[in-house]
Length: 111
Image (cartoon, rainbow, N blue to C red; front, side, top):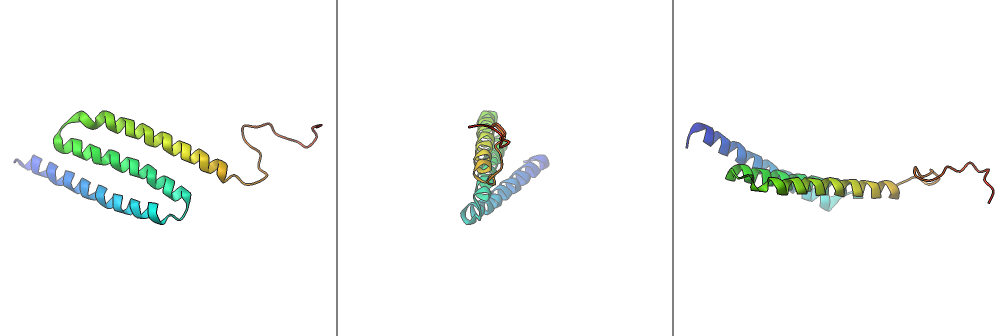
């Protein structure tokens, strides 16, 4: 192996080690919580770590086979995060605050 190939392998191995350490920290955050929002963000980061792992595997193999899979996972992670954020925003709305999509009531309407 030449020097650039050796450097490439060392950097890719370091990237995989960082991904594994981040995954361990991510699992502890999902397990311990403390809130539902922390767990939702952790699941979003989990999707990003899976994409990073597939990218590292693709770089090791020098094969672009996983790129469309990574794109689909990124799209699913994004839509899942948006859905969870909307659910949490509706659930955590303070009482008495008007909804953004409904008519505003002034108190002068006749029944």
